Each structure stands twice: as C-alpha cells, then as structure tokens.
Length: 299
Image (cartoon, rainbow, N blue to C red; front, side, top):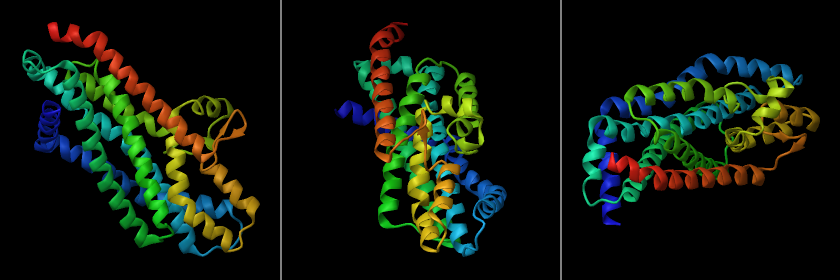
C-alpha cells in the first residue's frame, strides 16, 4: 500500500510540476466557460425565448442558460481533462521512466493503479475548480440552484471523472509516443462534445443519429449534468406560469429528457448506465494490464 501511495504522490507531483501540462488542463475548462458565455449564451437565450412564447422574467431565462452552459462545460471537461492528465503514463514510456520503474521490485499492478489513481485525483481537482468557476458565473447571472443540486453536481463530476479516467486509461495503455496521445487528445476534445450532446442538443440531430447516440454512455452523463444544473431554473419557469406542455417540450429540446428506443430514461437509470460503463472499463483496464503488462515489462 505504501508503494502505491508513493507512486500516486510521485505521479501527481510530476503532473503539477509540469506547468505547461497543468495550466493546459486547468485553462481548458475556464476558456470553454468564457467562450460559452461570450458566444453561445445569446444563442441559447434566443432559442429559449422562441421555444417559450410567453413573457418570462429575463433572470429566469438567464438561469436556464447558465445551467445549460455549466452542464455542457462540465460534461466535456470531465473527459478531456482526464485524457490530458493521463499523458504522464505515456510520457514515462517516452522518457524511459516506465522501464526504469519496471526493473525495480515494484509490481506492475501497483504501477498501473498509481497511474489510474493519479489521473483520477488530478482530473477531479481540476473539475472542482471548473465547478467553482461555473457557480460563480451562475451566481452573477441568475442563481436557482439548491444545496441538493450542487451536491448532485459533485456526484455527477465524481462518476464522470471515473468514466473519463477509465476510458483514457484503457486507450492510453496502448499509446507509446507523445504524438499519439496528443492526436487522441485532440480527437476526443473536438468530437466528444458533439457525440455526448454537450455542444448541440441531441434533439437537433437526425432521428437515426439520435438512436445511435442513445447507445453512448456519455450521453447520459451529459443529461445528468443538465438535469441537476437546470432543475431549479426550470421549476421556476413552471412556478411563473409557463404551461407544463411548454416546459416538457423544453426538457426534451435541451436533453434533460433522454429517450432510448422511444422510452424515457429515468435519472436512476442514467446513473446505472454510467456506473456500469465505468465498472466495465475498469475491468477491461485490469484485464489488459494482466495480459499485456508482463510483456511490456519484459520488453
């Protein structure tokens, strides 16, 4: 246990010591927040105004917009930051540090756990900073979050960081150069936001693509963020007199409601889908290390 703890501390220290890697990971969600609030907020605000043909207090609309922006940012950064944080595993392969550690009495399983745990802790810390920045932004434009909503957002971050860490660990295991991890990171950063419904609501896609995206676990992670970030503001819409039909249509349009084979997926089912995916990916990471870890050590 001491060996694993030492390796985790070593990996985390190396990550935070690399100022370029650290600031890239930290600045990415903050830049997204600035870009979202600058360019997308007006688009979202106009869309909501068109979808709800009734007078609504502008502050409530701002609260809905802020919740959508925050949920989009967190849904993306939990995954993209995990890939950035996991670069250390590949960097150790490139620098030869991985082989140096492998020739010591340290077990390969301990080394694998240390990379996984360090990636999780680093990604979780950075996303907590991103959440804090988002909450400050929400408090400025329109706060409708309860304590329970914030706690659920923390839970969402926890399970989505676990998902991002597991996914990046499985993929990163097979990468052996800086160029490969940079290429994978770029692909994930540019594509993930679209296929999980963060950049564009799934309802805006074609019916066939919607059915395909419904099979992706990231879709349900985004919807969890949507529900918990926007619940208070949407409830305030109902309390202000907006008809229930219009509110339900809004929930469908912004992916608070997700449908799988025309059946609405409950919040509990969304949690179950993401958690099951995490368990499967973690199991795959363990199996991969058992099968290929020894070979990599000998080489």
